[in-house]
Each structure stands twice: as C-alpha cells, then as structure tokens.
Image 1 (cartoon, rainbow, N blue to C red):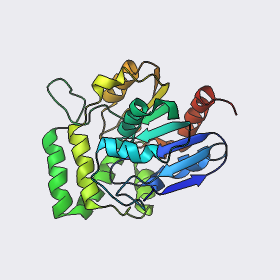
Image 2: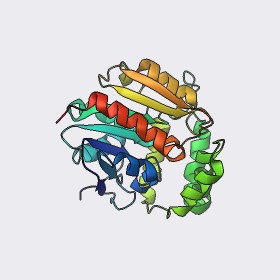
Image 3: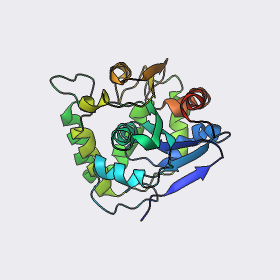
Image 4: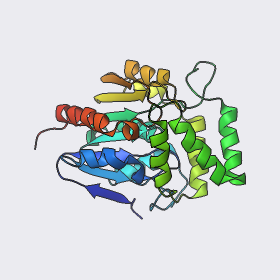
Length: 257
C-alpha cells in the first residue's frame, strides 16, 4: 500500500518528512505557509499516521517507500529522524532531490567514542523499555523534551497537546529507535552533491546544536541557520521565519517551470 500523503497548494514541490513517533500533522502552520506558493506533500512514514507498516522498518526500506511517492524532482525537507531519512534519500536518489532542508538533524543520533554530539545509548534503551511498559507517559515526556528551553515553550506545549496522538504501529516505533541507535551517516555526508540548508535551534535538547553545525560544515553545499532560544521544533516554534527560509532556498534550487 502506498504511503499516506496530504498534498496542499500549487507550485514547486516540497516534501515534508516527520520525525520519530509523529506524523505529517506535526508540520502545522509551517506547511500552511509554504502551501501559499508551493505544492506541499506531507507524508506519514510507514507505521505512522495513516500509513501502514507493511515490512520491517529500516532506513533503506523507508527510503524505498518514500522514493516511490516522490515527485520527479523536489525540495526534500526532513526533521530529526526525517532529516536522517532525507540524507539517505539524497544518497540513493539524487536526481529526485533538488535540495535538502534539514531541521534539527544529525548524522548520528547516539553518542560514541568519536561522536560526543548525541545521547547515551542507554537513554535510548530506556525509551524502548518504556515504550512497552508505559507508552503514554513516554510520549508525553518526549513531547515535553522537544519543547524544553524554547522561548515559546508554553505555546509549543499547547500546540502539541492540541494535536491528537498520532496512531503508530509499536513495531515501527521500536524499529525507528533501532535506526536512531545504529545509523551513522557521517561517512556518506561528504558525498552528497545536493544543496542543503541546515536549520537548528540553539537550545535543542534532543539533537545537540553541535550536530547541526557538523552537518553544515561537512555537507559540500550547505549553509547553517540557527534560531536563538529555540529547541527541537524550529518549524513549529518559528513557522513564518522557517517558511521564509525554505521559500528563499527553494527559489535558488528548484528549476523554473
């Protein structure tokens, strides 16, 4: 079965890839802003929202399923895990990707001996255990962590609370955690020959800002924009400013019709 895609607006194609445990509804006002002059495709990844999980979820199976619904060429906009997926798609299907926008994205989510810009693997193991024992509390805590430190933290929490909990296949959630635990894209980042914008909040508690700085420095054609007093949800905390950045970048990289 094909992925669920909500399409709005007309114009150059922009595809939105959400993060772990969420769905396409997370893009909210940012997507509405972009749809004024772009055709916006908000996807539900497999096992999330209205897209069923039909096979085990890995970074490459996600890339294959998303590639099957991509326009011939598009600006690919990914957030967090969706940003890691966008990087993988740019490696595997560069002809379909005219540019990358990476919100709160890292090439490697977990910290290691040679990568201090991540969370401890034991913390992710705790997520997996709590996902089985008490998923409601886990999701509430995770949503709170995405907002923590943002100057609009209270407003962000209200916006997230107003969204219905996205239906998700628990197997897909565990497999998504496996991707976050094991994926390491650092070796391929330097080979991605696609223009990119890296957008990060300087108070991100989920993906350290240093990870975004590393991406911007190591992607061959990237520039970094950092929002002050902003946490893990730049597009939700600063929808108009984020849409303006993406709109400007799209004008640079999407061929005129």
